[in-house]
Length: 217
Ligand SMILES: C[S@@+](CC[C@H](N)C(=O)[O-])C[C@H]1O[C@@H](n2cnc3c(N)ncnc32)[C@H](O)[C@@H]1O
Image 1 (cartoon, rainbow, N blue to C red):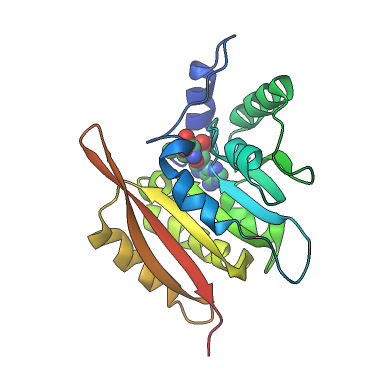
Image 2 (image 1 turned 30 degrees about the vertical axis):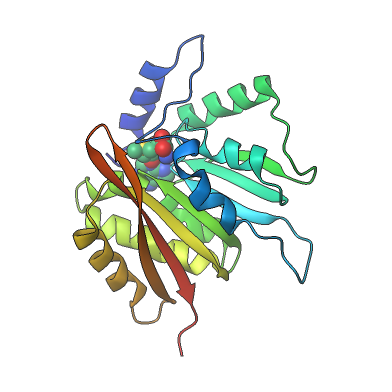
């Protein structure tokens, strides 16, 4: 589930002349109350908050944050699949979403999230959202190694005031332990991990794992 070709095929098969966002697990409305309170205006400067959706696919999550945020946001939706990125660019271009804040921007980017740090650099992002992407990596060959690499890249690119939200169906017994271990990696930024239940949908429980970096020492 980490292969670009697999996802290109998936999005090609799901695309038709009538574009419809494909949502893994659930859509923006299920998590809006977890995301929106994190979008607080910066007191010391007026820069927009930089939000990254890793493995955005054709989800409406990033565009909905852009549309509904009362605070200025720079939303980047990134995916390894150029098909998903093209579909989203075309869809958003045709729909012309009006953001609540006039300085908000929305962009789509073809990016392997394992290269996230090389692309964004250190201390650049205020919020990273991940709906199902770490789950997809974990379910691939050497998945734990790949997913660990991505979490570490996220922690390095997040500002100290920022956080990473992972939406997943993985049980807290497994995910919390794994994230706490990643957050204690020597030489990396330390992190606190919390879990909230998103809800039960079609008999499956979904969770929001919140990873908040804090400087070592
Ligand atoms: C389970 S889907 C979730 C899609 C979307 N977040 C949603 O909620 O519908 C996983 C997504 O991760 C993307 N993906 C897989 N490996 C990736 C990687 N290394 N870098 C960036 N995106 C990746 C896939 O193309 C796919 O769109």
